Length: 495
Image (cartoon, rainbow, N blue to C red; front, top):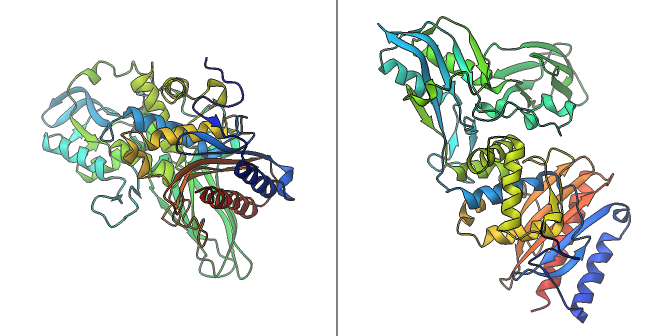
C-alpha cells in the first residue's frame, strides 16, 4: 500500500505566497457563503506540474456519483487499443442436415454494449457516427445462416451470457433503481441498453388513456396502461417494472397539450432479451426455430461448441466508441460493461470485483495515486458507497491528458458549449468553451472534475465535489460553476 501524509503522491503544496493566500480567501468566500456553507465541500486545483494551488478537504473521501466513470474510462483508455473490439457469435449444438440445424442455436455474447440505437460522435452527420437499427447485426447473422443453407432450427435458440460472471445486478444498487435503464443488468449479451423504451403522449381527448409506442416490442412482458389524459395541468406519468418480473405498468396523468416523453425500463435478463431479438431477425430471413427461446449464464453449458468455428459472427464498435457515451452522456450500463471487460481481459474473470481490482492496481501502480484516496465498487457511480478524493481525480485526469491514448478519452470528454452534459454550462463566462469535465449527480451529491484552459493558454486540473446537500440542483450546479470560473480568473492573474 502506498501511504502519503497530507496529500497524494504527485501533488506538491504551493508555497504560502501573497497570491496563494488571495486564491484561498476568494475561493473560501464562495464556498462559505450561506446556504452553501451547510454542506461538505471537497475541492482541489492543481497546475500542469501537479502543484496544489487550492484545496479544501482535497485528500478526504467523497461520494463522486458519475465522476466514478472517470476511473474506468481512464484505465480502459490506457490499457486497451482504441481499435479494440469484441465479437458476438452464433454456434451450433448439432449438425446441419438438409437445411435443418439439428440441435440448439447458441448466441454467444462477449460483452458488446454497442447493440444500441445511438450516436458515437459529436458530429451526428458524420458517416458511421450513428446506429439507428438495433436489429442490424442480428440480421447480418441471420443472413449468414441463410447463406449456409439453413432454413430451420430443430432445437432451442439460446442466449449465452456466460462470458461474464453470473452476477448481473450489482449488490450496491438500490432496489428501486433496478426497474430503470440506468441500473440495467450486465451480462455477456446486450440490446438497446438492456431496456425497453416506452414513448408516450396524450390520448385523443380528456379522460382517455395516454398513447404508448414500445420499442423493441418482442412480446416478452405484460403491460398495463393505468394512465389518463387531463384537459389541464402538467404531466405526472411514470412507467414501472415490478422487481424480478416481466410485469410493467404505466400510472399517472398526462396533459392534453403535452409533447410527451420516453421512459426506458430495464429487462431483468439481457441474454434472453437479445436472443428474442435474434429470433425476430431469423424469422425475417425465413429461418424457423422450432424450439423455445431461453438463456444461460453457465459457462459449462456450451463450452465445447464455443471452441469450434462459429456459424456467423459480428464485431463490436471499437473501444473509442464505448468511451464516448460513458463520458459524453454518462451512460451507466456502458461503464459497467467496461469494468467487467477490464476484469475479463486483464484480471481473472469478467466480474465487478475483478474489474475494480484491475482499476485499483493500475491507478496505484501507474497513475501513482495514493491507495487511501479512493475506494470504488462499480463503474458508473450508481452505488452510493463509491468514494474518491478530489486530489485523486486531478491526478488521473492529468495522467490521461498526457497519455498516448488521450484521443480515445478526449472524444467523449464533455466540453463546455458542445453537445453533452456541459452544453449549457459556463456560457457567457471567461471560461466559455474552455472547460472539459465530467459531471456527477445522485441524491444529495453533485460533482465536476476535469480541466480548464485560461486565456493565456495554461491548463489547470480541478475537482469540485459537493456532498450531503439539500439544495435544488440548479443552485448547487451554479455554485460549482462559480467556483471553477473563480479558479480561472485567479490563476490567470498569476501570469
